[in-house]
Image (spheres, rainbow, N blue to C red):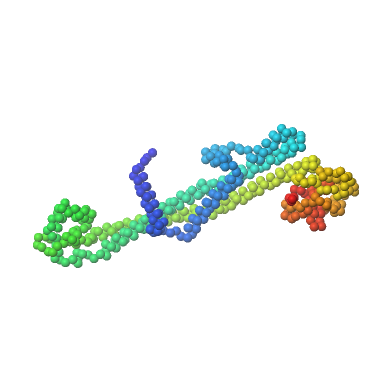
Length: 450
């Protein structure tokens, strides 16, 4: 490794100088080149986009994988560029436990059969969840990570370069200002050589001091600091005597003023170079910041993909659970006839009881005419059936439902209706009443209220 000590020292000096300059700007002790309002708005917009993208990314990861240990493991596998091992979802694990329980408790018993049905549904839910996580990761999380790890790092790098160029530009402005101030001071002071009295000459002691610098250390320092450009200080001038020669004035000579002019020219040249580099870097940074609009368009498309995958996932879950509910409703109707699906309340009392020993767990037979009538005739006589004296419940409609025939009641989402069961009805259906309208309604479209 080539280690350049001079370059390291130079970089350290530049870093320290910029740090001091930046601190002075913060305290208002140094001038600062301000960016235009449009550029400042682009910077603020980019920072806001980065911050909210990070938050959305982190919370989406929590949604897809609530287990923090699993998230850390996936992060490590990603950084090591290794494939993340397949992991069993919570639904699939629950399905496995239910299947094992049914096998041990008896798959032929009602409880075992129900466990098997629920385990199959949970397994399908787990598979749907796995597909949703995979799709959401590819279509939504990956673009967000690419922005933070790719585009944003490039923008941050160019912004740091722009900050350094601005500090260099401000430093060049400060040097030019100091050089012009020194030049103005050198040119505006009157020439002492023209205004001093002509009878002032250099004294003998001053002449000896001029030759022997060891006797006057201050004069030696003066001579070293101003070789050739300055002559004798004014306090060495004495009244005229014939033993010494005339001394020259103590002000800067024309060659000194030329040095200040050269210093100003050099500072102006450095300022022009710094201004050019700053403008070039500002344009590059501006183009990158304006590209944030394209990033928003890309993220919008990814957001639509995420919503689409989430909708598909929940639709699959609803379909699986609806099928499971129908299976369990049929089983429950066979095991517990005459009860509400999914409730533990006793069935409605009989419309007319023919046996005083009828229990609440079974529904007595309806009047003979209705009992002997076929389903088509029973549907026609539905309007003539009165609700039971007790056992009715309120229910909220979850989804819109269009009646398939005149025996069914059309439903609108979020409306409240009265429901009850009749003897011999399919357990997936209830009788619903709304005002003076009555008809069969599917249980899966209702939320039974207590």
